[in-house]
Image (cartoon, rainbow, N blue to C red):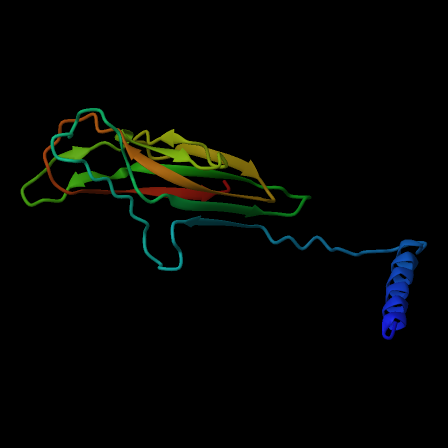
Length: 179
């Protein structure tokens, strides 16, 4: 069959090359320990360079009835930590949910909602599910270098408080640090 011989010759050449590599007496790789220590956190959509918002809409007549309200859009979180094997690092993810509480932004209102009314569910379990504790440095997760974890968190408002109507805004601050 025309053209069959060159294909077989190429196949034989490739197999011969593979056998030659496998039959080598010694192979030396020099991989210098150049792992520059670094950590990185990504929260939300970094392409738009804005703070991700979680929006809860409580239907009229259901305020404070204990029926949880889940946000429609999950928030992506990614944690990376890198260090050399000779000097491993441990990273700690904490959240501050007390510094910027949920305040009613309507004119003349002074009501607020504690962040302890908000919880999150982890899609994959890489970052554990939990509830904000209204603390400055609430521990979320820690792990050693060199690793990376990412997950999508879906937030839920417990809806257990009778509050005045309005728009409530607040902010939690995640910190990924190596002490």
